[in-house]
Length: 219
Image 1 (cartoon, rainbow, N blue to C red):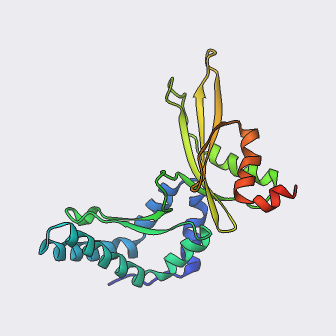
Image 2: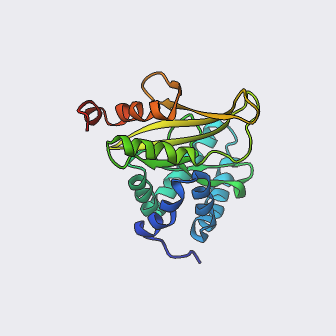
Protein backbone atom coordinates (compact mmCIF):
# COMPACT_ATOMS: atom_id res chain seq x y z
CA UNK A 1 0.00 0.00 0.00
CA UNK A 2 1.37 3.39 -1.02
CA UNK A 3 2.04 5.85 1.84
CA UNK A 4 -0.21 8.95 1.93
CA UNK A 5 0.91 11.95 -0.11
CA UNK A 6 2.67 14.81 1.64
CA UNK A 7 1.52 18.38 1.29
CA UNK A 8 3.52 21.21 -0.23
CA UNK A 9 4.19 22.45 3.31
CA UNK A 10 5.50 19.01 4.31
CA UNK A 11 7.96 18.94 1.40
CA UNK A 12 9.03 22.50 2.12
CA UNK A 13 9.78 21.66 5.74
CA UNK A 14 11.72 18.60 4.63
CA UNK A 15 13.94 20.34 2.07
CA UNK A 16 14.29 23.92 3.27
CA UNK A 17 16.93 23.29 5.99
CA UNK A 18 19.06 21.18 3.63
CA UNK A 19 19.29 23.08 0.33
CA UNK A 20 21.34 25.92 1.81
CA UNK A 21 24.01 23.51 3.05
CA UNK A 22 23.95 20.58 0.63
CA UNK A 23 21.83 19.76 -2.41
CA UNK A 24 23.18 16.22 -2.16
CA UNK A 25 21.83 15.95 1.39
CA UNK A 26 18.45 17.19 0.15
CA UNK A 27 18.49 14.54 -2.58
CA UNK A 28 19.41 11.83 -0.07
CA UNK A 29 16.56 12.94 2.16
CA UNK A 30 14.12 12.70 -0.74
CA UNK A 31 15.29 9.16 -1.44
CA UNK A 32 14.76 8.24 2.20
CA UNK A 33 11.04 9.04 2.04
CA UNK A 34 9.02 5.86 1.73
CA UNK A 35 6.48 7.23 -0.74
CA UNK A 36 9.17 8.28 -3.23
CA UNK A 37 11.25 5.16 -2.78
CA UNK A 38 8.25 2.86 -3.20
CA UNK A 39 6.76 4.74 -6.15
CA UNK A 40 10.11 5.01 -7.94
CA UNK A 41 10.93 1.33 -7.54
CA UNK A 42 7.63 0.28 -9.07
CA UNK A 43 7.35 2.96 -11.76
CA UNK A 44 10.99 2.74 -12.84
CA UNK A 45 10.81 -1.04 -13.20
CA UNK A 46 7.58 -0.78 -15.19
CA UNK A 47 9.12 1.84 -17.51
CA UNK A 48 12.22 -0.32 -17.99
CA UNK A 49 10.07 -3.34 -18.90
CA UNK A 50 8.28 -1.23 -21.50
CA UNK A 51 11.58 -0.02 -22.93
CA UNK A 52 12.91 -3.57 -23.21
CA UNK A 53 10.39 -4.16 -25.99
CA UNK A 54 12.04 -1.31 -27.88
CA UNK A 55 15.69 -1.26 -26.74
CA UNK A 56 16.95 1.79 -28.58
CA UNK A 57 17.47 5.49 -27.92
CA UNK A 58 13.91 6.38 -28.93
CA UNK A 59 12.58 3.73 -26.58
CA UNK A 60 14.68 5.07 -23.72
CA UNK A 61 13.56 8.63 -24.39
CA UNK A 62 9.92 7.57 -24.49
CA UNK A 63 10.34 5.57 -21.29
CA UNK A 64 11.90 8.55 -19.52
CA UNK A 65 9.16 10.91 -20.73
CA UNK A 66 6.45 8.55 -19.51
CA UNK A 67 8.18 8.10 -16.15
CA UNK A 68 8.65 11.85 -15.74
CA UNK A 69 5.02 12.52 -16.61
CA UNK A 70 3.85 9.91 -14.11
CA UNK A 71 6.05 11.45 -11.42
CA UNK A 72 4.68 14.94 -12.04
CA UNK A 73 1.14 13.58 -11.80
CA UNK A 74 1.91 11.71 -8.58
CA UNK A 75 3.95 14.42 -6.77
CA UNK A 76 2.64 17.88 -7.78
CA UNK A 77 3.04 19.20 -4.22
CA UNK A 78 6.76 18.35 -4.27
CA UNK A 79 7.23 20.14 -7.59
CA UNK A 80 5.42 23.20 -6.24
CA UNK A 81 7.53 23.19 -3.07
CA UNK A 82 10.83 23.02 -4.99
CA UNK A 83 9.76 25.75 -7.39
CA UNK A 84 8.87 28.05 -4.48
CA UNK A 85 11.95 27.19 -2.42
CA UNK A 86 14.28 27.90 -5.34
CA UNK A 87 12.51 30.97 -6.69
CA UNK A 88 11.75 29.14 -9.93
CA UNK A 89 15.41 28.23 -10.48
CA UNK A 90 15.05 24.55 -9.61
CA UNK A 91 12.80 21.60 -10.25
CA UNK A 92 12.78 17.84 -9.76
CA UNK A 93 14.40 15.54 -12.28
CA UNK A 94 14.75 11.78 -12.49
CA UNK A 95 18.06 9.98 -12.89
CA UNK A 96 16.55 6.93 -14.57
CA UNK A 97 18.75 3.88 -15.07
CA UNK A 98 16.67 1.53 -17.24
CA UNK A 99 19.34 -1.20 -17.20
CA UNK A 100 19.18 -1.19 -13.40
CA UNK A 101 15.87 0.48 -12.52
CA UNK A 102 16.20 -0.02 -8.76
CA UNK A 103 19.17 2.39 -8.85
CA UNK A 104 17.06 5.24 -10.30
CA UNK A 105 16.94 8.42 -8.25
CA UNK A 106 14.90 11.57 -7.71
CA UNK A 107 17.00 14.75 -7.61
CA UNK A 108 16.66 18.51 -7.31
CA UNK A 109 17.86 19.93 -10.63
CA UNK A 110 18.86 23.51 -11.47
CA UNK A 111 19.17 23.20 -15.26
CA UNK A 112 22.86 24.14 -15.10
CA UNK A 113 25.95 22.53 -16.56
CA UNK A 114 27.81 23.22 -13.32
CA UNK A 115 27.36 20.88 -10.37
CA UNK A 116 25.53 22.83 -7.65
CA UNK A 117 26.57 21.98 -4.10
CA UNK A 118 24.06 24.26 -2.38
CA UNK A 119 21.31 26.79 -3.03
CA UNK A 120 20.78 30.05 -1.17
CA UNK A 121 19.00 33.35 -1.63
CA UNK A 122 20.17 36.95 -1.67
CA UNK A 123 17.93 37.98 1.20
CA UNK A 124 18.04 41.69 0.30
CA UNK A 125 19.64 43.82 -2.45
CA UNK A 126 22.35 45.07 -0.09
CA UNK A 127 26.13 44.67 0.32
CA UNK A 128 25.67 42.90 3.66
CA UNK A 129 23.27 40.39 2.14
CA UNK A 130 25.66 39.78 -0.76
CA UNK A 131 28.48 39.09 1.69
CA UNK A 132 26.21 36.75 3.63
CA UNK A 133 25.36 34.81 0.45
CA UNK A 134 29.05 34.45 -0.40
CA UNK A 135 29.75 33.30 3.14
CA UNK A 136 27.07 30.61 2.82
CA UNK A 137 28.90 29.21 -0.21
CA UNK A 138 32.25 29.59 1.56
CA UNK A 139 31.02 27.52 4.50
CA UNK A 140 30.49 24.57 2.15
CA UNK A 141 34.20 24.30 1.35
CA UNK A 142 35.56 20.83 2.13
CA UNK A 143 37.66 20.34 5.21
CA UNK A 144 41.33 19.61 4.82
CA UNK A 145 44.31 21.29 3.25
CA UNK A 146 44.05 21.87 -0.51
CA UNK A 147 46.65 20.28 -2.75
CA UNK A 148 48.97 22.40 -4.91
CA UNK A 149 47.12 23.36 -8.10
CA UNK A 150 44.01 21.58 -6.82
CA UNK A 151 42.05 23.98 -4.61
CA UNK A 152 39.18 23.00 -2.35
CA UNK A 153 35.99 24.08 -4.13
CA UNK A 154 32.36 24.79 -3.30
CA UNK A 155 29.78 25.87 -5.88
CA UNK A 156 26.49 27.47 -4.96
CA UNK A 157 23.54 28.97 -6.76
CA UNK A 158 22.40 32.33 -5.36
CA UNK A 159 18.88 33.49 -6.23
CA UNK A 160 17.12 36.85 -6.12
CA UNK A 161 13.83 37.98 -7.63
CA UNK A 162 13.61 35.07 -10.10
CA UNK A 163 17.25 35.20 -11.23
CA UNK A 164 20.04 32.83 -10.27
CA UNK A 165 23.81 33.20 -10.31
CA UNK A 166 26.44 30.51 -9.95
CA UNK A 167 29.06 31.29 -7.31
CA UNK A 168 32.22 29.22 -6.92
CA UNK A 169 34.56 29.70 -3.97
CA UNK A 170 38.02 28.15 -4.07
CA UNK A 171 40.53 27.76 -1.26
CA UNK A 172 44.09 27.63 -2.58
CA UNK A 173 47.34 26.58 -1.01
CA UNK A 174 49.51 29.69 -0.77
CA UNK A 175 53.21 30.06 -1.39
CA UNK A 176 54.01 30.41 2.28
CA UNK A 177 54.32 27.40 4.57
CA UNK A 178 50.76 26.35 5.41
CA UNK A 179 49.28 29.55 4.00
CA UNK A 180 45.92 29.55 2.24
CA UNK A 181 43.83 32.08 0.36
CA UNK A 182 40.38 32.12 -1.22
CA UNK A 183 39.04 33.37 -4.52
CA UNK A 184 35.53 33.72 -5.92
CA UNK A 185 34.22 33.13 -9.44
CA UNK A 186 30.80 34.44 -10.48
CA UNK A 187 29.20 32.28 -13.16
CA UNK A 188 26.33 34.04 -14.99
CA UNK A 189 24.45 32.23 -17.74
CA UNK A 190 24.45 35.08 -20.24
CA UNK A 191 27.99 36.45 -20.10
CA UNK A 192 31.58 35.50 -19.38
CA UNK A 193 32.55 34.25 -15.95
CA UNK A 194 34.21 36.66 -13.53
CA UNK A 195 37.20 34.80 -12.13
CA UNK A 196 39.73 35.26 -9.32
CA UNK A 197 37.79 37.85 -7.32
CA UNK A 198 38.45 38.43 -3.65
CA UNK A 199 35.53 37.95 -1.25
CA UNK A 200 35.37 41.74 -0.81
CA UNK A 201 35.37 42.47 -4.55
CA UNK A 202 32.91 39.68 -5.34
CA UNK A 203 30.10 41.06 -3.15
CA UNK A 204 29.38 44.24 -5.17
CA UNK A 205 29.75 42.34 -8.45
CA UNK A 206 27.26 39.73 -7.25
CA UNK A 207 24.89 42.54 -6.34
CA UNK A 208 25.30 44.14 -9.77
CA UNK A 209 24.46 40.87 -11.50
CA UNK A 210 21.49 39.82 -9.36
CA UNK A 211 20.00 43.20 -8.41
CA UNK A 212 21.31 45.72 -10.97
CA UNK A 213 18.63 48.35 -10.35
CA UNK A 214 19.23 48.37 -6.62
CA UNK A 215 23.03 48.29 -6.84
CA UNK A 216 23.13 51.15 -9.34
CA UNK A 217 20.96 53.29 -7.08
CA UNK A 218 23.32 52.71 -4.18
CA UNK A 219 20.77 50.96 -1.95
